[in-house]
Length: 220
Image (cartoon, rainbow, N blue to C red; front, top):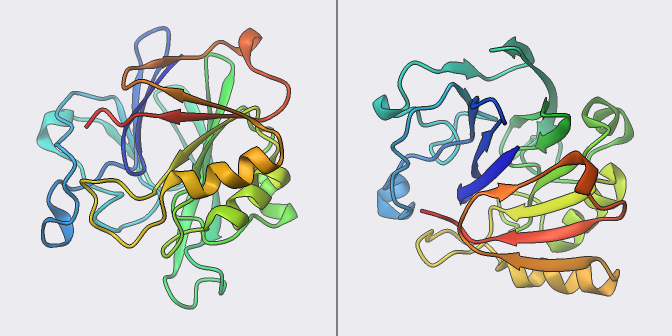
């Protein structure tokens, strides 16, 4: 399996057989130009959207005719589990709800919890478990901040954690930098590695047994 961090909360997952799954694509230029990441303009087979905000649910004509996944379903032979999660730490009172997704590609389970606002409760975590790769919001304001993100890792017990939804020069939103989360990760002696902006190849046999934090460089 290959995984590419497009930017913000958007990832491209590619199976060994060539299936292409795009997660939470953003609308370029959204929010009056604050979403300044470059457009992603490639064909994909499946688009997964955790909720209807402009930085998570854009479908460009360049994507072709993908299956659109917004709730638990099966698409192109992939089973998507979905769990309702709050977009804030007040059980949805401020920002409503998102759908967190779990699916497997090439024997590796991937969890994208959308704009999760607090660590998952045990019943929610059970829907998402077991987790090999966790795409984790860490920037605060609209999602969990660093401390809550660490608690989410401790709850979900993934083997690989990839931070997302944090401050970036071309995303003019009130978010914390990824370094704030890394301070928390280092305090727990989790291995942290920074990766360049190219597809990350993952093989189940090579996954670590304890959490490893991979900070991916956005490609867009």
